[in-house]
Image (cartoon, rainbow, N blue to C red; front, side, top):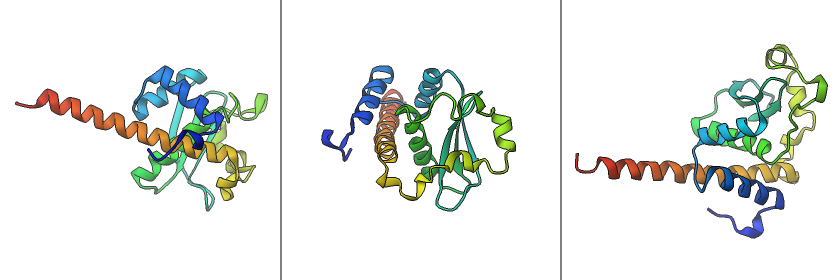
Length: 167
């Protein structure tokens, strides 16, 4: 996996323990999404959007849903990794239930905003990602999640091939 226990912050360790308890040792991307939806009590939308240079994705907690958007034109792999990074922000507790408290927009209202990226880039963290512990934790958890999801897919493949062997 490429990580040792010393590489894991207390935040990432706590998140992994919670996921292990809730989802087991391996799980799919869809199971992870469902976990976040249950835990936060609202749907998690995965979409594409246009973004400023240097940005590949964002997450925002809206009034009626959570939203993860990825840059249009990413490869399938880039898109999945970016989604996992943004999911990690939710799992690590980086986003409150509503990003802007009582003033938080709903999904449709958010999409109508011409300058909606200001809501998600106000801290400008994507320029110095690895100097920021929150971003480093999200990236570490995302890489571990990618390994877990890959292992899950490989195990499902082995089970299916065992079942179908001899047909």
